[in-house]
Image (cartoon, rainbow, N blue to C red; front, side, top):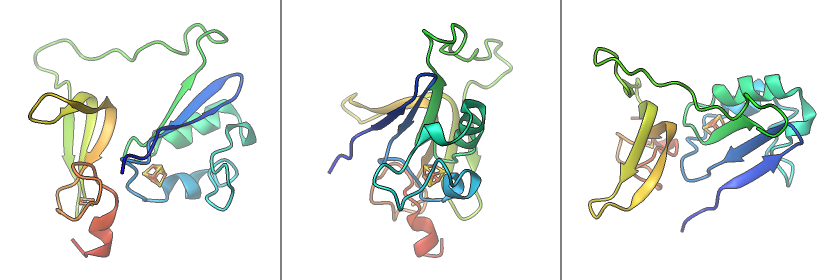
Length: 148
Ligand code: SF4
Ligand code: FES
């Protein structure tokens, strides 16, 4: 079953959460519990901290499930795309083999099926390498349960 992208907005900030790729690390809950609280029905409340704090917490999300962007109409620079390296020496995508965990993809990427269907594109995600994820090819944190 496909779980839908969740969007949480203030006047200044747009936070999205993609449950398909969350690896359930709990980093968001530990970093900014006022904003990220799974005991609330609306578990992300971006009004509960300064936008910079929310963005800093989102940047720590190891799976890329959380994304945050300043709303462009308020902050003209906020929606600017990050610059990607253009020289051939610099990798566009960095893949980190995590200890006992996923393959962390950082950099502009696109995950496609053999028939070319785009499953996800973005700048950060974790791919399962333990084989146990229920949201393959993405990591859902199952590697912890199976002691990978
Ligand atoms: S992967 Fe991201 S969204 Fe999921 S629990 Fe960890 S920090 Fe939160
Ligand atoms: S590597 Fe995380 S679920 Fe497989």
